[in-house]
Amino acid sequence: MATSDEQLKYQIALTLLPGIGSVIARNLVSYCGSVEAVFKAKKQQLEKIPGIGKAIAAKIRELVETGSLNYFEELRSEFPAEILELFSLPGEEVADPSLDRPRRAGPRVTSRFGERGFT
Image (tube, rainbow, N blue to C red):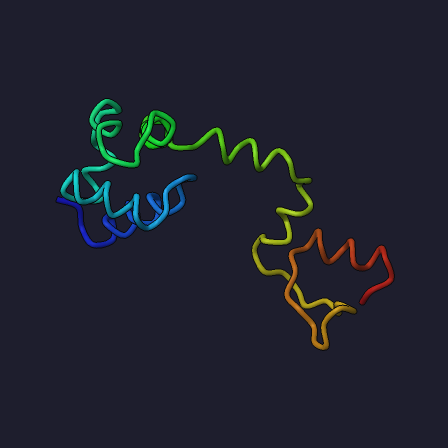
């Protein structure tokens, strides 16, 4: 049995899978016995659960077997790297004209604000 931290990781992973809402997540856990068991189930077992088709079963198995989802990689490739940097580690405060207060920004974002005349 997984520790509470591991259980939480399994729960978070389950909620992040595309196509899985609260009802399907409950069905998965109910049929498999635990959230950990969902990720240990074979694809054929998952497909037998009401509301779970081949696509969702395949995504669960892909996450287990590869540690990532092609779905998320495709989404990531649709956005420029600069957008992802907005969510990077905190850097220094910069004045953002759209806000009434300074905000924290990473070093590349900070330099881009400087290039555009914001300080």
